[in-house]
Image 1 (tube, rainbow, N blue to C red):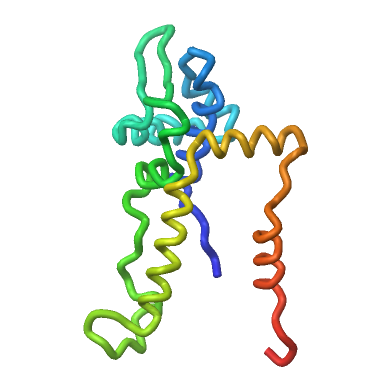
Image 2 (cartoon, rainbow, N blue to C red):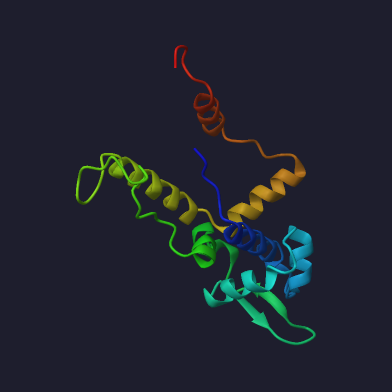
Length: 165
């Protein structure tokens, strides 16, 4: 199963993480510096930053000493806030069986477990702040971050299939 961010959310998270990294230094970040640092195409960065400003997650200041900064502390902005700003609400309302064979008016048999999985994802994104992401990024850079064991087991078990499958 493929579960990945759209391009807009990907770039929005990168831009927000860059701003979170620089939150305490008091300087506003130029869009070009964000694009260069986070490998975002320069043609996309104005749109992405404008969406984050519209959502109230980022503030912008015009002029030579202007630029962009987070509107609040990185601890108060979640990954879900950023994804919603870039892509809108991320809950799917379409049938996951792609048009059939649904026999019910309101929902198919897969609806409830799929909705539970979506809510678990949204809860995780909502409880992960930009400060959390920056802390992980810093530990990755220092070589001290280790993937939690429960995630490595889940990944290993999802890639192996029992014999005869």
